[in-house]
Image 1: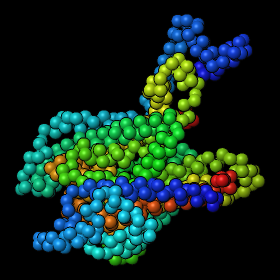
Image 2: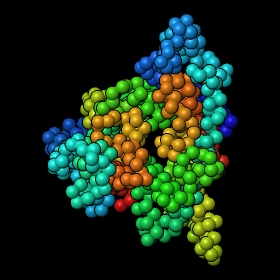
Image 3: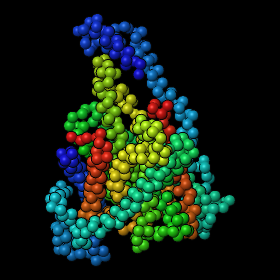
Length: 307
Length: 328
């Protein structure tokens, strides 16, 4: 197991380097001069401009700039933005918001998705099954923009149940954006749980449990559902990474000061170091949670072994 | 299924009769028995192919999901191609005096902020969404099929290299990547937005094709084609790719819907299409400012967008059910 994890971590290095290089090159290709944009109406004196360009290595060719960046990166230094603030500070400040948002979404999709999936799976092709099928298809199809504004307007403005903007109201601020972010995955969790449950209901151990006279509740709750949770739990693990990096639109709609909002502003203001830093961080999160899921698989299902 | 087994049987008989015939026996069977066998082989191949797709078609015709999806997609494609069929009003004929007037019998969907007829705008908005959806998926397919076929067929270090590059692109979040690409351009049209999304959506087709190519590469009929002297190009294009298309087709149909909503999201962020382009994403983004007073500005483009995405997803779902023999 340890060897497997070590190998996967080694394989992650070229992926991280590749992704950060692509982002670096894209930022490099952005039109306009970030230093001139920095100063506004009164241009900086040429000496100051030259000093700044030198400090941020802006006159080096792309590959040299990138080399210097990676050199700092391996020492744990993500660089500083044009306002003189370390990128790691910005990530540290924004990360809790995005993490809370992703965690809220994860809880919502796990609870609602599992419940819907189990209800649908118990009676296959029944009324509830069809209801869940139709509603999950709708949930997948409604674009995040539409569902975001609809929820914001009806639940937030009309009903006034939850705040619709910012994070000043504590955990309640995260309920609506969490639901919007979770919507697509929620449908997927429900379907996955349903398929998995239908499959395990066919197993011999379910028949045995019924044959020895256990009540249906116990048969389903203790035997069938627990065994069909494995693919669902692993999907949820992998989805956490996707939720964190996929929150740009949701954070925009609900005005949350998270990483997605930060990276979007950074792109618009040509804050190269910030863009590369946050994007690389997203890629890292994605890789990390995928690895976690594969490890989790082996832990949950003793039949799976990595050598 | 029946032809490969019978072919193997014939080969075994051959080997029993003449053990040294070896690999050439399979060619011997088809060419040696003259034109009759060739006709049988040709018709057999054709019947087999018609069998799969004929079966799929028969299955699809009876699926309500498919009928719904196909009808809606057909309507939207016509709407994108000739919007004049649906409205005679010019979407850009605006009168500020009518700004944000409610829907009425004269203007079914009301008027937008500029006082333009909203129904005409929503109709004309189909073009951007449908063309971007189709262009992105076709572009992604082109890249994905090519790389997947090369990686799966060649194997070795090319395979490893392509796998790592795919990993890199998989790690980049779709919207963020598209923002980065699009930010480099000051004027952005349908082609550019499609390009930005296409270079970020080829990874799944690539992996699907690669795995089927790997599975098919050493199959009997590919061996037979090679023995007949077909070169790599012909084998991949004529024999391997057509047989690995089914899962990619399902994925691509569904992802047209995903791409269309991604385009809307980009336009909403102000980084996709730009005014005066007409796009549902732009309309939704604008409607946000008037959500409290004129929510109908959100409903109409939102409903059209949802319906389009839903139609493509239903189409893909129905196709998957029809192509999966396990569900029959």
